[in-house]
Length: 606
Image (tube, rainbow, N blue to C red; front, top):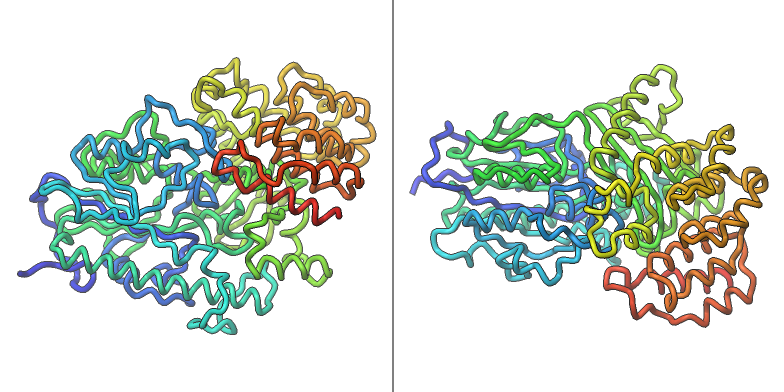
């Protein structure tokens, strides 16, 4: 048999398709940036994926929607921004509208056999619906199990690159820790070098497994009819990459390979060459539907980049970061080919907030210890300090995102262009991130966050956003406007007004003490929590942290604010100690957040 191999044989001239629909194989892995040989990484050892890239297209401008897996994978499944459907908070569960369909469901309706091996990890309440989404979603799921004659869509997820695997010790290093590149924001110490070296080792392991999967496709004669995608789910599992809203947290590799007879589906087919299109995770679902000859539904927010329904590329990529585990933040990021813009709506919180899971990484703990000891240079220390409201980086001149150009007069026009585009995007997708998480849920009772956000009476975003924008820019001159808004009838406006006072620090808090004291009795628990943090009122926070009487989202916010207080008296801590060690009412994805925070506070304030 004279069969062309995408592993070994050079590409031939494109041929006309001979079967109705192509197979589609997705190979994905956890927590890697574009650290492959095909993307120019000098520390890489990835021969199988490099070979695939030499015969396919590599995309150097691809963003995950989120710098962490669950919201990112939610965006792939739905082709919708997580914050558009209320699914942005890491480890949360929201209801997806019953009248909308995920892309595997649409592929199955079109005759595809769809398998997922095997990670789901969506921020959606889909556990009872997986059988309607996938033909098989399990560790045994495989395209080989399909009925005869059916095309397949198959996802295989490799976990060996996950952050949990790059901190396992002991480890036999293949990459020499002394020779790996260390970015300038990381301290150059043994923990950092070992973290980066082990990261590259695990990518090599993953490449080997990807090669086996490609060989399996070849051995069973499916290579000629199988379109292959390879991509990572978010940035590397090291601090200031995964869970952080820099370009490095969103930037992932994407390789797409089309066999000869399906190359007509590519708009710009240049084997072995980069495709400079701006691409993001919400584009993947409409692309596979387009490949299958299907028109993507109108609720999809992504743009197909292959097939008959391909659309022009976007002008910007959009990323988001909200609650990460037990820590609240609100960041919106954007990039074009050259610049990345980061809008920090909670600049009083450091990029490097404490998170129990991330602090299990030796690199993170060692970096923080050096900060506490005052042994870091300004570039390295910045991660642990309050953020600027806006960040702008020239990725051509400054790929490590060190030199913030947001206040540069010569970049003013660029900054304003990004500002305007972000504002437009927030309103277009009805970004739900400007509601406290507890109110996102309470306002969605008997409906979905997606539907709630499109009801202007229930979610007056056009009124809320200007106050959030004003509050987080930290201009002292706007304090009177915030004080006035602290008594607004809309609770989300009161929340941002009080938060804006807190963010401005001691003097603004002192000038607003009467308003803040009144806010301790606000009908909204989220407003009460922010006011109590501003006034260091541990009693109010402890009361709201009781999982027996408060929703879990209120409890998490209250405990997070307690952790920001410089001191908590013994009676308040004793009350916290009397609470249950776990929250029996918490849904599975929230299960560890309350006990993690409770243990930390009891240890911090003995």
